Image (cartoon, rainbow, N blue to C red):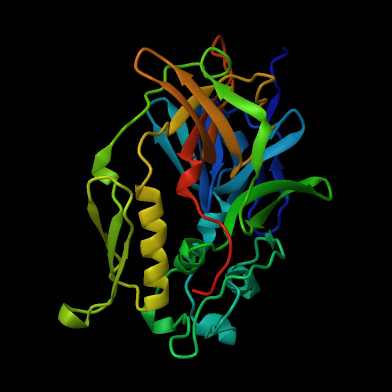
Length: 365
């Protein structure tokens, strides 16, 4: 199999103008995440740094593999480290964490009552990008859901005096039980790279019966199967805003013929009881799973070719070792590709969570 060809492209963050089509980065590692910003790290030789024109906070960086854009984001840091320039970037989903609501209710788009959280996500981006010098030309998918956020007695508010980063509003929507999921995607637009936010409801990705991660096939390094009861439990006590007997509390508990284990979930800024109940249930479902492979290192293989799987996909993971025979559907929640360099072949490190930790669907919250 021929080695893939990589190209690293940088553009002006505001104008989108291409500043360099093929930077000679080394030590590159990049990838996206589920309902979170992806990341990239790389290094550049000092003698080549003048080619980069890397203006931290004002430059976007894209990764192309064999003509396909795999990643895009904003350069946040460029720092000399030893004999190289170390570059750190995050996906465009990191941008709302650097912005605040200076008008209140996203410039009168809220407060939100029985609102679709997908619409709230789009409102955050619309507010960010309508401000002068804030337009990254990021497109956001027009997906809708049946989930609701905010009630007539307890609307979802974005008050300017709370000084919460807008990224926290995005996090709130993704944290709703059965709520939308999102990830970043780099796309070609009129011959230049651009960014979009993919929204999935009831989920991102799908169950992939055509792909497989398996020891001795495409899993290239031993993977421990972790059985850890420290985070296990059937009872979650969620504590929200307030003090003493006035503090908001939600308890979600089930019986499953195992020793009762209880966990505490501290959410001191959560004022809405409905969202507190939702977070408690989601946490309890996740904590009932014991035995998990959380990460695998892969080589490019026909069983699961690089670029053939996406954030949110469920993949059957089979691990055979001296300790266990593990066979479980697992969900891709993040990945980083390390392009091949010199005699080191291309590798992907994929973060996983057991598929049965997740719930999908609607309901009023």
